[in-house]
Image (cartoon, rainbow, N blue to C red):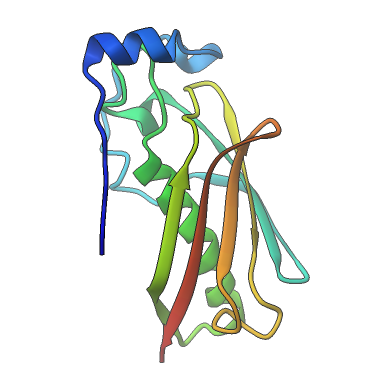
Length: 155
């Protein structure tokens, strides 16, 4: 497995990221660990192998990314995207659990506090192991991240 994670120095990040947008861009410092609770997904809908949901980006979800311009960490977003697969498997095979097989996560941008991320995903109609689970995270019409996972079901 190869993992590459590039971290920008604060001054470079500030120059590149600009300022946060939306009503939650200002406010008190986050107080909770964004990884401690399930992703606060809204409007989760299942239809013919597709699952959609919304995630409101708040400062609490942006802990450590970045103090003056809060951005949703890709790891928190990836957790939200895999939560939809958990939900699908839980509805269709409540006795099973899953572990990731081949996985590809790609991030093309960052969502700011105050924005809403729409998650649009698909699971093979033959079941979650029939083909990879695919999920895109969109802010407006811009894809900010995507994940492809081949889940391995564990009875």
